[in-house]
Length: 75
Image 1 (cartoon, one colour):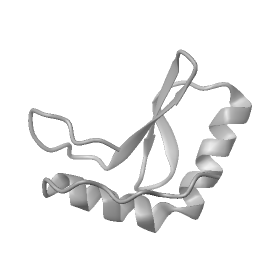
Image 2: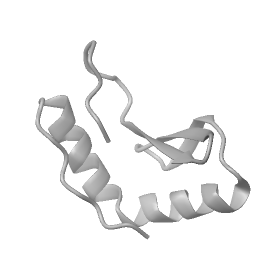
Image 3: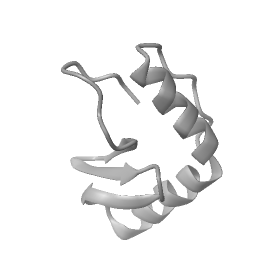
């Protein structure tokens, strides 16, 4: 996660990258809201996000207050 310049986002989300593919996932209920990934990679990202949902939401709050996010372990 990265803080983007230009103000706060209203919906908690994160971006996932795989090669040239980009997908955006909601944190309120882990689901794809934009973009795409190959099916297998999308399922891995969703599984990882479900395991780390509390950490992702905590990082989102840190970013919204201008602080850097904490590292989250990979899958």
